[in-house]
Length: 306
Image (cartoon, rainbow, N blue to C red; front, side):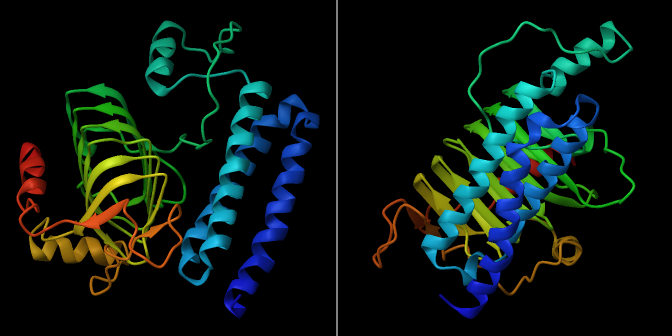
């Protein structure tokens, strides 16, 4: 293990142990303080996840996988504890319905609905599209969450089928969380955070970011600009190509500058497959042939909002 990797573990391991201890004691926290405690743990787990993705290139493949799985395990455990300890609230489209019926916040219905544990993502300040079919979705149509920091906004795309999604706007974007998309086309501008993708199938993703991680997905075309090695895990038939000239040069240069992305550095074709640790090329991903690339695809999506 390199010196840099040892220094990383010297930071990661104590914080992991501290978070696990806090999770173990979460059911002892007073009810009046439980929401704040959960929110704090969400932020700590996200921070630890960002630390791993930022250092992924210096870590041995085994260590990287162990650390990412530890973060995933803590996130799932927190999700289960949150359901157990906090009155359950549904996704925002449910919340909007309940808000129209009653202006005062009330505990969720006590009748439980069985569900499989999901990764915990604090979406209180996210811009979100969820549970849509056959629609064109433009981020400019969403309200912008207000927060005191003025930081770039994170985006969550969840449960979309046969949709086109345009996230290109004058809103600075941070991390993009994508889960359970089928047959969708996404156009994502240069963002200052990561693109994190789970459980997607038959989609085309066009995006630029600092880190890219894709899990349990298949049959994807990914036009990517990424300044670190992208990661796939439990994925098959993933096809990669460079991001390309998605926007006019001046506009694209400005977005890259705002996101602090180096346009000269693109590791789209240096994919790390955590299910394939051999020296030979992984069978789960490849680079698109020139004849397969669709250079006008992004513009076809963007033109719907011009």
